[in-house]
Amino acid sequence: MKNFVITFAIAFVLGVALSVIGLNYLNKGPHNDEAVMTVMGMKMAALKNNIQQNRCVPTDIIPHLQTLRYVGNDIEAAFGEMSNNDQFVRYASDLRAAVDGALSMPPANCAAAEAALSRIGKACENCHRDYK
Image (cartoon, rainbow, N blue to C red; front, top):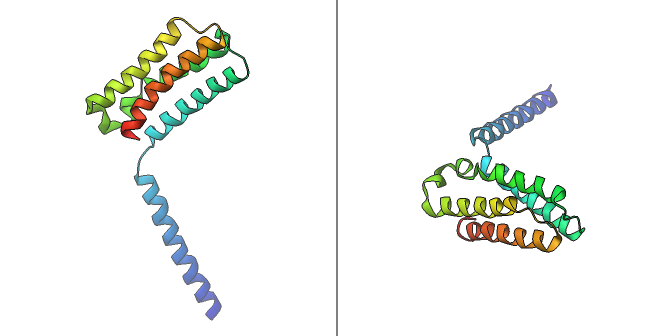
């Protein structure tokens, strides 16, 4: 009987603790900022990988650029309170402009793809330097 009470007390305390941890996590809300940055990082890595593997024809590059552009539309919304910060909005706009430039004249070879990736990466670095 004594072992049962001790086991029940331990299970009850663990249950309460795990419930509090779970509710605390759920109350933080969605992590849209992390999701946007994760997708953008994944696409930047895919572009770098294409260049390293000498896979730089437009059909290999454009899908990644399109995803960067589509997700780039959501930067301000994903970072909520930052959408009122003029510098942050300018950095997001600069990123979209860099991707738009690459999409308007898709890279036809690895040198052009690397130059486009460099311009996009610079736009990312400017924001990360000030806000990461």
